[in-house]
Length: 224
Image (cartoon, rainbow, N blue to C red; front, side, top):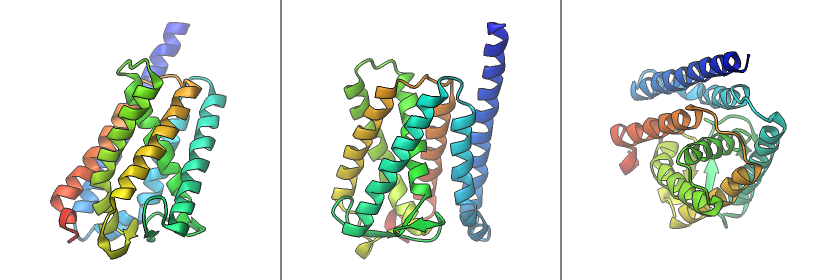
């Protein structure tokens, strides 16, 4: 019976990975085709919600721990964005566009969801590396996320996710990303969430490829 459950879970994971890869690929093609861009930009909130749903429904361990992780990271991620936008003291001076949808206190609710997706996917990826020290793993994960943000920022400005004053991304932003990422990844490790085969690597790799390709092909690296 246990073996059958494992087989069923593996099938679910494979389907989830296929959905992750296909939706990122289709989305990338839509963003690369100028005529399709306006339509695909409107689909960004639904895409993020789908990735979030995959994380939740494909998880096959202690659901209470997962919900605690989701609530903790969502609230922390969202609140730090609210403080960042309202004060300009955390990430620098920036404001959100319309792509990410409904806002509270000038911050899209989906920013909390985005932090959940990023921390979960990187945390899962790091667990597959068998790094036993949670502090070391959190530091490595934060470096990875800062590297990811390097490609994300210009693309985000190009497609109205958010905008930096004077079109300049401050070093302060990357420092803040690193610190917030370390804290949230340490929280992830403290909860000891079970590793889910393939999900984390597929999620993070798909997002990274998506933003790297857009960075390299749409002129976003020079804020065109």
